[in-house]
Length: 146
Image 1 (cartoon, rainbow, N blue to C red):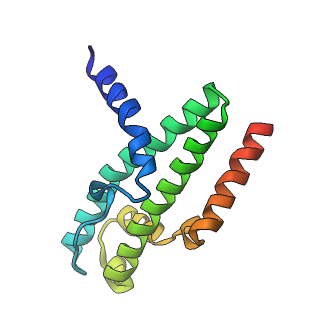
Image 2 (cartoon, rainbow, N blue to C red):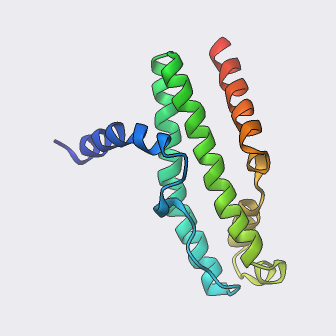
């Protein structure tokens, strides 16, 4: 079995367990950081590698729904949306509480400054959990209708 097939099998097997847990897996949560340039860069590196995994789960749920329009897959897609929001909230709040604007302004690479400022914007993660569920359900309902 190829490496990609093993990964897909693992994903299919564990996906319902991750969604039913109601909390982000520990390895998706941000670590501890200090208000320093080196920790800001480490934060961005950690965020990028974790976001790849979280985004993969969300895309997988979306693909399942897009290729098999069932209520079950719709619920999984909404749950994946909520997981992604929880991830955005956890990392965004960490960035907001740890890294000062002065530190961010002092980062030498413009893309790092833009990226960390973007992480600090929480988007729909600013909403309460029930409001996020409503937004996700409404969004995917309209997607299903079109």
